[in-house]
Amino acid sequence: MEALAIGGDPRERWCPFLEQPMSKTALPFNGLLFALGSAGLYGLNIVYARVAALAGVNGPAIVVYRVLLMLGLTVGAAYLMRRHLKAEREEWRTLALLGIATAFVGLCYISSVAFIPVTMATVIFYAYPTMIVLATPFVDKTPLTPSLAGVVVISLIGVVLVVGPVFEGLDWRGLALAAGAGVATATQFFAAARCRKTDPVAKVFWVHLIVLPTALLVGALTGQLESPAILAIAPFAVFMTIGGYVIGFIFQMLALARISAAAAGIAYCIEPVVSALASVMVLGERLSSLQIGGGVLVLFAVVTNVYLESRRSTPLVPTD
Image (cartoon, rainbow, N blue to C red; front, side):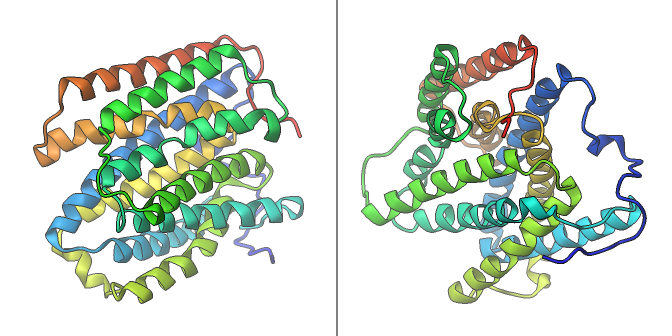
């Protein structure tokens, strides 16, 4: 993987937003803020993707153009901040795994709803925080504490209540694809948490350079790869969809450079809660009392996780 030089010393970073915080105690707290911000933006993103779809803008087209936009933005950011789009040699394999996992998240998740209801696919997909926590003792070689296990169980119950599972019309292919999306997401979190030496801008660039062929292939196979003019059908919805993904993904990479996959995974349980609330305000949908109760459980789990992380004296990050 060749280095793509944009000019200047990559150590000359005038943008404090992307700097690694110096305080070890501030590291996990800032990471959780980035994770919560990312989850919130992803939650809004999916609602406006629905608005765009109802207007006639297909999903594969949005995916392709948002990847192209992300690549353009990272090259521009590297030029303005005088950085190199270079992946650290010892992280090439991890970065490749991160890119492949990112590609499969969307591919599996979008494909799953062709076989099972969206609500069921969402419930299965959002089991990934549980997968992360359960895999942490084996991947990060850190013990699973009772408090962390309790938090993830509460958050999982809350997600199930918020989404409201439907147990009709199930197909093993849809179940497998939704579970595959969850596994890919867990892999994405672990890989990103280990890719710490590569500059965040370069990380985003290489990941999306790997995602682009997959997005183009899906668009070609589904016959939904259209010209950019299709985006003008619903400009605001497309802007919110693409913008939410772009900023949300950047926040996700910044979060996982500061905290462990397990800590971030719990924070992302707030994503379906944001989606549900946004659906009420944007799409006019209604929430049942059971869904509201589930949202309260998720918020309780997230706040508890933030509190537990704020009491730690050292950042919850992998050491190897």
